[in-house]
Amino acid sequence: MITQEMIKNFPTSPGVYLMKTSDGSVIYVGKARNLRNRVRAYVGDTRDSRVHIRFMVQLVESVDYLVTDTEKEALILENTLIKQHRPKYNINLRDDKTYFSLRMDMKEEFPRLSLVRKIPSDGARYFGPYSSATAAKEVLKQLYKMFPLRHYPLATCMARKRPCLYYQIKQCSAPCCGLITSEEYAALAEGAALFLEGKNTEIARLYRAKMNKASQEMRYEDAARYRDLVRAIEVTVERQKMVAQGGDSDVFGLHREGDQMQIALLHIRGGTVTGGRTFLFDWELETEEGLASFLNEYYDLDAPLPPQVLIPIPIPEPGPLEELLSEKAGKKVTIAAPQRGPKLEMVKLAQKNAETASQERLAKESSSATLLTELAEKLHLARTPRRIECYDISNIQGEMAVGSRVVFIDGKADKNLYRRYRIKGVLQSDDFAMMREVLSRRFKAETTEEQPDLIVVDGGLGQLGVLNAVLEELGVAGVEAAGLAKSRTFRDMESEEISKSDERVFRPGRKNPITLRQSSAPLLLLVRIRDEAHRFAVTYHKTVRSKTLTGSRLDGVAGIGEKRKKALLKQFGSLKGVQGATLEELIAAPGMTEAAARALWEHLHGQDL
Image 1 (cartoon, one colour):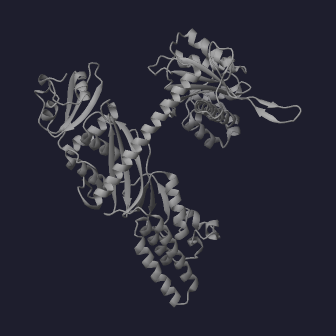
Image 2 (image 1 turned 180 degrees about the horizontal axis):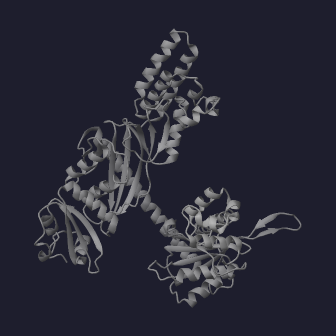
Image 3 (image 1 turned 120 degrees about the vertical axis):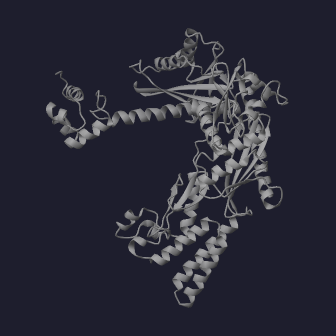
């Protein structure tokens, strides 16, 4: 528990504090404008009514602190320490999903749109964000129909002697072959930029004027092209029905159910809702503090920064975060919780999205719980199988054999827990022995990894027998086992009709398999898990086989890595040249040592020196 004695010498300056347990692990990292006053709120019998706050404080044995000059520096340091320690009571936004943006450098001779992840300060114009490459590519696809810009790098375009296929389908204006002037191309590029910025009315007016001028000058083909552009823009604008007020902004909404906080984000660009996404995380402290911590972590992930961030509730001390975001964006960024008007309406919409996502998640969890309960009943399991592991083997007549493990938590695949195994101790084609090796390695390993409730193996009684034997030998208790055998195909000799048997589930102690109703939810879940394990094993086997078939005689030599291998091939021209080199020539090769050269000579010529 935190005591007054711990913090009596704490400074009153800004900084970061770290709450630690008796074993020295950090369970919470916080920032403060005044370290002593902030941590004092946790001293003794806190008046906070929330049980989890009191519980967290009871775990604390010591509090460390780091002083900073400003609140902004404390904010940056807090984010760094959270990523380093992954405290239990902080938000850990494990988000590896990088946003995509479209980039156009107007300083180029013929500007081109390209898909990028990073937004450096290079003077180019960036448009987005798009939450997936698919969404960004769809925007590009529609854009090229209206604004036929070049698709390839300028050097590639200028090396061509005739227009590419995109010109033939009217999605490129062929600047490489001089079929459009620099001025006309610049107008197309500016039109595309205005369109991506949401200034559709301005574009339509611009091209309508160009259409009228071309018509008056009897350039009817140009007039028709501008007419088609105006029509395409108008049709696209009609599809964009969600329109907001206030230009570019990110709008956040949140919905809390107990210790789980659901956050919804809407991207508004050019007054139009261009996309959004949701986040879910555990948070046991104040909602306002959780939202502030989330914003700090989210915008640290290279997320695009608009000039305005709208939130549903005020966050404590927003000034340092605004300063940090403004510095990062290179322009003023404000964080506001609107109380009225169109901005409040957009926040309410984000709130509704957060609530809907939370309800959908709860419904899925309820459905999943019902499904797993039914599966437990059908297979006569002692408890509901929250964690299910499935194993499979893949090889070609015993060669390049591999194993796989997939893990499903509450009926959903958790790919972070997938594992691949390279079979080491079985040389012949023996799937049972290979399965034994994989399972033994899984349960022999000294690990704190959670034990499964149910293990499924791809196979019938044979593979199930191997699984049971391994569990008994290693003394693994409380783990249920099942073998899922594929359906068998039968041909009726008289009618020549082909039929399939049901999928069969074998369980220990039962001679006859359990047959689940076709298309029933428990069976579909087991089949999906089995098929995922098979896919994962086959994918790994293909990778191993590809590496084996494309390997080099220079592989596996002590002291010969990728750099030396490339240097040798460059020095001698080819593998044949390396093989024909003398020992002295190998020793004299750039970057080689005598020991590595001798090891390579022995490897290539099969003799000791």
